[in-house]
Length: 589
Ligand code: ATP
Ligand code: MG
Image (tube, rainbow, N blue to C red):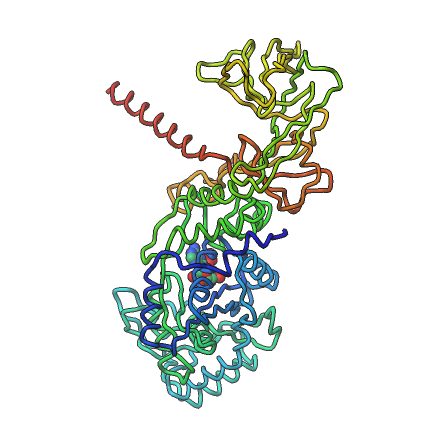
């Protein structure tokens, strides 16, 4: 997808948004000239999946803090210490997504795997200080010995190995002389510590697996808690910002750095992760959906992945604005997905040209319009932005309108086309429907015969006659046929992860989350579109040209978002209905 500079301009010249507790901490640190007045943050993804909107919050926060402080730096660091789950494909996708969001790490890209040798040296330091030992209990024994929240753990029988033995065994672990799972290196802290994480945590384990960067050079890999704090220290990070679930790990973060001779001791600060309603935000679960074929890939437009949102038509600016809007807090909460939808509507309203497209076409014939005549009518491209100019849209005798814009027996509040009724065709003419032609067997409506009033050109009547409905339309002779995909929320539950009896994630999938329409008719200005182009289809919503399946003359449009929040209405109606049923039940009692 091509990114116009306009979309990306905000990321680099970010102005400070509203204050939050992390901004306050940093401002205070700067005031006291802590860290010699430097601000160095990092975004540390594990390359074991594609990034999602939750990661965008962390990216905007870390890169944003660096950008808004003079001389600030944000490193992109791949936390790649688990070769079983990681892959170079994920590294590339993460880089693409961070760049697309509008952030530039410059030369500040790092991999924890680049520090394997240094980390090994640090492990030796710990052993030599009597602060780490090689344990030969099995994984399940280690778990048993750990104790519980209410009971202290037990020391491993291997805890008192001599420093020399530990050095020897650790060296042999590195040389590959032992099988996976036979030994681990553990920190020697306190098996009765009230914080379970501090009960002699594992620092290294044996995994005879090739690593996507170091290949077969290593068969022992450092654990997250050992790697992360040391990588931060090696890179001179000043503020190590992570999500709340690492709060308990902070004690270990500080313990490791306190034992060792490190260049600096970064401050770990936790913030609440982003949770969104009607979606899931765990790479592991997202990977499950992809691998089980429940979605078309990591970039399925129904997923909250950055690549999915991109393919859906989201702009980087809308995502950044959303992240700024939700703020940074210390307490977990769930953000309504409607707020994300609001952010993209707000942006596309300003930048998307208006066009006309008919999703479920019904042909109408204007009986009193001359045969073979075509008029070019002037359409404003975007009333929000006069600089976007105007275009010509052809009008002719045969047109398509939306099937559900006509009803033979309309209910009271239906203001669109009906037999004998006059409506406006947008920016064109008033038309009146005079006859409905049906398939004699199926009774399906095939076409409508209408007449138009030539005096209403442009869509208003000189005699002041008013009509209640305005329809969008496409001239049949000039229409381009397109495929359109309508997306809805992937899950029907507000919190799809919440386990209820007999209710798993998959049973919470919305069966109507994707509707594919073929034979849609769009105006001829859309004959040649580029993947990633975004439009507002009048009255229908915002659409984006699919970046994978669009072929030269066969556009595929993905609906990014409807014009209004129809979901809110549906929910409200559903709740009201429930209320009515309950009331009825109560009456019966
Ligand atoms: P997941 O829980 O989705 O598997 P993760 O935490 O394992 O994600 P990492 O690659 O470790 O994924 O995440 C990189 C950074 O992004 C971490 O600092 C992490 O705290 C942050 N992050 C991950 N998920 C969220 C979220 N939902 N909201 C805010 N930040 C997040
Ligand atoms: Mg993680």
